[in-house]
Image (cartoon, rainbow, N blue to C red; front, side, top):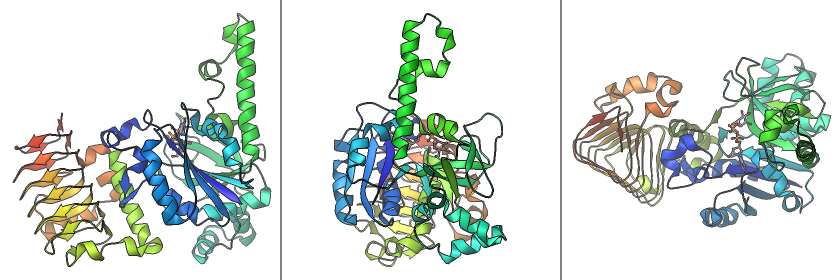
Length: 454
Ligand code: GDD
C-alpha cells in the first residue's frame, strides 16, 4: 500500500496570492474550474494501491470539511484534512502526523506541495508500472543508451534509497537547485533558492519516500534539541549557527534540513519530468496554470471541457471550462483558456479570453474580459472591458490575434500583467479596466489603467 500527503500550508503562507486568498484558502482557489488541490488529488487517485490521501495544513478545519467529504465521495478514496496546531515546516508537518500516516503500514509515502502545477507523474516516479510509450520515446530521444533510460524511469525502486525527488530542467533561482548523477540519477548536491547559479535542475516539490523519512526528520529534531540543550548549558551562544538558534526543535524544512544534508549519501534520487511544471504563488500564475490544467483535461478529463450543458450553442475557442450551473448566452464567444465558475451569467455578445470568472459573477452584454480574474459576485457592465494590457483594444478576431501570438510567459507570468477584480465589484457600463487590481466592494464608473483601486 501507499499513501499520499499534500502539504497545503496555512493562512500565514501564500502572501503573494493574497488578493485572492482573503476569501478562500489558496488550496481551494479554482484552477480550470477545480480547486487547486483537486489536481494533485486526482493525480494521486491514479496511483495503484493508494490507501488514503492526507491534506496537512494549519487552516481551520471547517474550511476544508466540505471539500474533503465531497472529494472523498467523488473519488471513492478517503481524503482527510489534518490540522497542525502551528506551522511545523514542510517536513515537520509530515512528522507531526506520522502515526496517522502510518496507520495502513504503507511501503511508500508520496509528498506533494499543493502549489505546484504539473502532470504529477507519480506512478512513474515509483517505477511500479510500465512506462507509457510517449515517455519511452522521450527518453530514447534524449539518451541513446537504453539501459541508461531504464535506470532513470525506475529510480526509486531500483536504488531503494529513502526518496525520489521530481525535478525539472529550468534555470531560476527562486526554487531549490540540485545536481544529479547523470547515470544513476542520485541527488548529489542540493541548495535551496541559491543566490548564485548552481544548476539548471530544479526541485518540483513532489516526492516519494519510504517510511525512513520519519527517522531522518526525527534525527533533525533530536540534533536541534541537543543543540538547544548545549546552548542552555553554555554561555558560548556564538558556537551555534544562526539557523539552529532561530528554529524550534519541531520545525523541520524538507529542503534545507533533509534534502541538503542527505544529498550525496545514496539516500535520495531524482526523476526528471519532461512535461509542464510551474509554481503557483501569484494570481498571474494561477491564470497560466488554469490554462495548463485545461489543456491537460483534453487527455485526462475531456468531459470537463466546454461543449456540455452549460454552454448550449455559445461559440467556444480552445480549452474552456463552464460550470454546469452557469448560463452562457449562445452569442457569446469564449476561449481559449477560460474557466467559468458556478452561477455565472454571461450575456449576449460577450467575449472572454484567458480568464477566470469566479462564482456568481455577471458579465453583461457585449463586455470583454481578457487575461483577467473576475472575483465572486462582481458585475461587469455592458460594453465594458477588463483586460491586462492596452495592446488589444477591440474584440474582433483580427485584433485578438496578437494575443495568441505572444508567448504565454509574457502575458501571464506576474500579477502585473493581468487585471484582477475582487469580489462584489461593479464595473459600470462602458468602463475600461486595464492592468489594474480592484479591491472588494468598489463601484467603478470611470476607466482605469495601471492602478490599484483600494
Ligand atoms: N502543512 C504545512 N505546514 N505545510 C507547509 C508548511 C507548514 O508548516 N510550510 C510550508 N508548507 C507547504 C506549502 O504550502 C507548500 O505547499 C510547501 O509546503 C512548500 O512550501 P515552502 O516550504 O514555503 O517552500 P516553497 O514553496 O517556497 O519552495 C519549495 O517548493 C519549490 C517547488 O514549488 C521548495 O521545496 C523549493 O525547493 C521548490 O523548488
